[in-house]
Length: 286
Length: 157
Image (cartoon, rainbow over all chains, first blue to last red; front, top):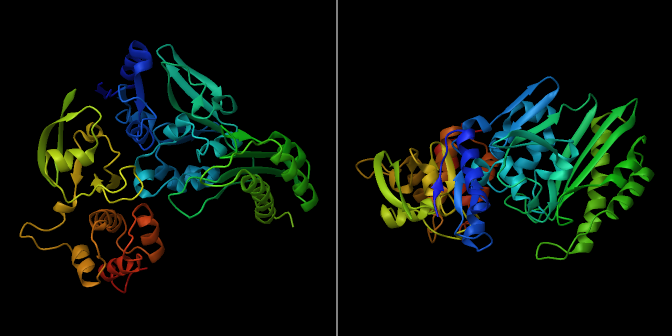
């Protein structure tokens, strides 16, 4: 096996198109290196280290779109002023990924492409209606986030392609969003349940509601039925309780060493109720 | 297959042959014989292997050595001065008994050295957050926090 360290995207895409399946894209390594050492990924695969392609890191905002490069680290997301102002759920999610050492090298692109059922950045990305910008040698194409997460550790990223970054439409005025996570301790914890919630409000009524979750199904997902139940409401407690019940019909949690399926089901409902309460207060809905 | 790696370790240029998927912990311990950096969990959880790359603490047990090409790496061996005098933080660890078995200590020293370099007077909360990726099973953390506090002084936030 080889360690390839291209300096440009073109160089990287050329290597990937020539080598195909035996080349694993590597950024911060906080998932890939562990998966190699524990036999979850074959050690015969060569590594394509893209960490030197500095164009793929950073956050920018123009024409109503926020662009986040795939190599932007969790640490960078936590303190970037565009993110903390416009997409606070991304900063909150990034702050819950591991400790400083993990956040400093782990990237949003790695978190999304590794596609763990518990990927903390996936719910905010889904709730924000983000688009994944991917590229092979023929140039970039776009995949809606909802079509990106296919199954446990499986994405729709085509072979021979690299995630360049994501594009997020700037949220409308009067939008509240947050990432709420249940774990056994405050740091260094894989989510038992993670919820990204976003409510855009016009005249004290929810115009759009977005709910997305991780750790409750093989892949992170949107909770469309829960969202529909909240649309048009004032986030009153009756509507929210009903929406929380509907949302739990959409998930398929399992029992594992972190939590039981029934606990996860209950927590999804509780987090939705908590999000609605926080949003009402923050948006001055009484 | 081995590949050549050039980097700087504790201010000294080093050039070594490493395996293509070798991790920095193995390069430091087995090739450069800097055994102050410890192998704990070996999966990026416990922080015993923490070293500083540039200004950033990283878990060297899962950091690919070849990703450190051209980088400035600091290990616990680089903290003391040329005459062997301890850094202020190392001295504080001794004075406040922030060390019991000592296995986690090099990792804590590197994480907290990086913290003090980026934030001269961190609050207790910032200290706690910074060391969330380091596990100590002896001290209960309060003596470690006190060591940082004694370096920062009463003027700290």
